[in-house]
Length: 188
Image 1 (cartoon, helix red, strand yellow):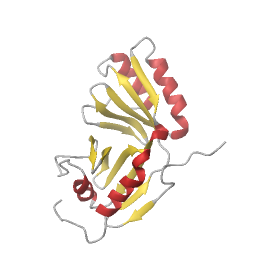
Image 2 (tube, rainbow, N blue to C red):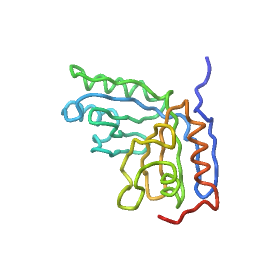
Image 3 (tube, rainbow, N blue to C red):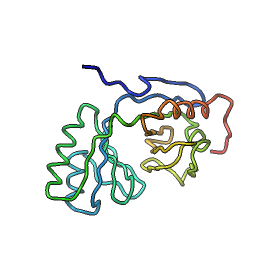
Image 4 (tube, rainbow, N blue to C red):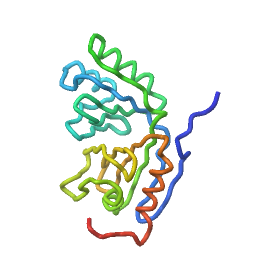
């Protein structure tokens, strides 16, 4: 049996910010009634966090949940813990109308770290990255140049990006091009 590896197998780049492939990340797409008490309790039990608000992310270390749409969350956990997390969701949501699908191997995750993270994202995404407009704990689904992506701020100098695995090399190229030394715009 083969060993699972991330899309870019640990690729990294150091420029005006550091860009790195985060490796394997457990992810479950969860759809259902996000206002349901049962949903809130199940997510808390499975992910260890409360449900995020609209365009938010709630994290407890490497686990948590991100708001994707009015009836969809992205539940994050350890890659080797996806089966347990999904079983906890299934148990907690028994009798509810919901869908929980392991999408871990269909996604890639990157971390961008450094003082210029806002500039890097602003160059390639149509999102207001100004302080006060986008802060830690906020989550956005958007376009990253020509592909769909989502990202959130972990802290003032760290952003995590999620994209489809099939476009991981393209996204890594976008991020590294935007992070080229000397490419600082100085807007943020």
